[in-house]
Length: 69
Picture (spheres, rainbow, N blue to C red):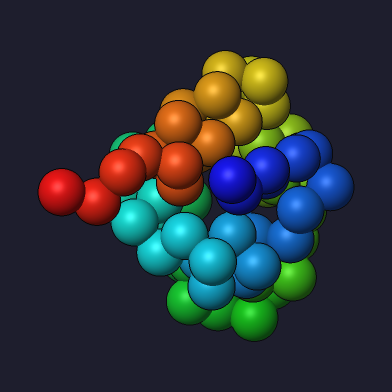
């Protein structure tokens, strides 16, 4: 099971669960490929974009742990 937390670096999230990228894009994190965004924690990115970190983590963790069918 993958567990993404507030302290997880965005780049790590995308490396272990690339299928979560659309979630980040949908909340305005459009520069996922830039070095700055890949080095931010989930909490830092949410603060910059005015997003509730707990709600985002719920979505990202759900998507990261879906069974591939």
